[in-house]
Image (cartoon, rainbow, N blue to C red):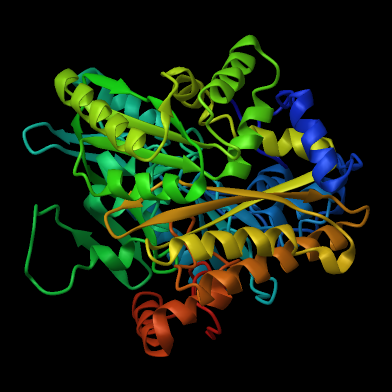
Length: 538
């Protein structure tokens, strides 16, 4: 991967991937034709940038482009701000510590200059996790972790690897690969996100069923907080009181800056298969997914698409010969009228993988489904880190695309999936706009599953109106999630976008406990103000 463009996801200078004509026709039929926007240029944004409140300081960059590149993440409000040329508050400087000592020096500088600090890893937050607080008038320093990177130690006997928190996903696997090891943590942002960011946002990789979510992989490390360091030992287990690691996980830079991460690594699987099936109706597809999740098989992923997402996926596949053959085969097998695509990943020894795939096939057939081989799974593997590129392509066509996700128990999942889809599809009825929304299950558990929703709507000619459309959809969908007893975030974190709903999940006393921790570790309120904790005063 190269350097990401300053106001999008794809590499700077690269062209967005083409959208299949069938997918464009589907969007035009569902929500109407889009109007390509006129985006601001980087030169225009630089010209509008105010003077840094910090000026020249040792070890800090005040270069305007550097500041702009560290001003926003990847949430839709971030995109609207940058594409419209109205980035809002921009950090006054960018710091790049290389050691824990450097981090402590930045803490001292922030106290001395009365500045706020925003930890910045890969800048991939889709919930406003690196966006400056517009109500905080202090100077701000974006603390890039890019120099806190690399493999520092590898204990092969214990299966423990120590990385600098700023190590990018590909760099993690490249360092482990020569030793025949893997972390196995592959979020969709894997190519651009950092291992410290995964911990800070409590990430779930696409194959978490087999390798574990980041809270299972995170064994320890070092957190530099303004009040002092916290060293987390990588004991295999402990009954020595509450686990402090659980406070670091999901803390989103509010308690300090993670400098070192110790993670549990495993031998790279000998075989990995991603077979696929289609089921004819959503209720039976849900039954199959739940049965698979409870079967105790050596699977690393179960991914089930709703009928609308399946239809969208087939439209994106276009009119290639393989896609036409697949549609014909489904008609021949009478899978429908609203088929659901099921992808399963199995990783490990060859015989165990064969056994797992065979057992999944038996479960699917009992629920009226049919196998279609490995082609859809191989296609998914090839493109799984390319899907975010579609955001750039759709924006250029006049469409905004965003995602939200939750997790709920199996008994509540059918109702929540129905309510969430209906709410998103009709969320802009009041302003005369339509929404194309679809979802899938991507992380299954014995007691329930995640639910990941994608929604597309037309850009307005006024950026403020586009942002208002997003707020309407985000608010309505989040309210539905809370009413349906879902978590406000299964894998994206809280950031700014989910703060209003965090109290419904944590409770007033729970939020007070987190605020107390923040005050103890960050008594001067330096760290990432406005993120994670609602109604916080410094």
